[in-house]
Image (cartoon, rainbow, N blue to C red):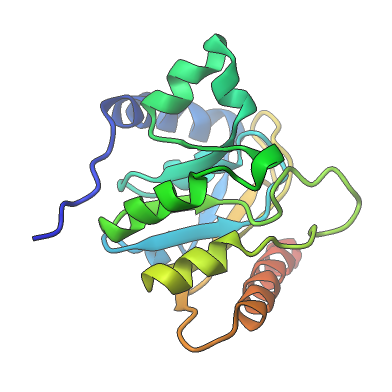
Length: 199
């Protein structure tokens, strides 16, 4: 019998306290949250524009998500306790990710959920999306996990009028090459973002 991935207590408490505050302050629109699988292995992947992007998915589902987070957050005692305590996986970007991929696949093999931003960093450019790295599709193929794409648009402002996250239908890499799967993920995220911006 496979051990299920357990959600850390700090994550559960944080989500309970955060959800009403975050929803009131930023007024986000969460579209198609029913596409988030309630169980089973899944990689939740989309664009990255703001430090708070992960909170949009955290408040959209009751299941725990292990987010990939840059090593710098684990280096400082001010933030280490929080990122470790909520089950985040440390990514050493200076060392090809370190052992983060193996740790993430351990979570997936226990039917857990991984949150990842395939751009690898926040997009501070005028381009809609940065090129996607291959980590998400590679891990999905190796663990036979679903990939759930999402697109985030809008502004993180008090009572925002346009902050939106939209989820697409989950898909599996299956027999696709990593290049084909990565292009599919990129196009899905792009499509979801464009859909958000339609009047």
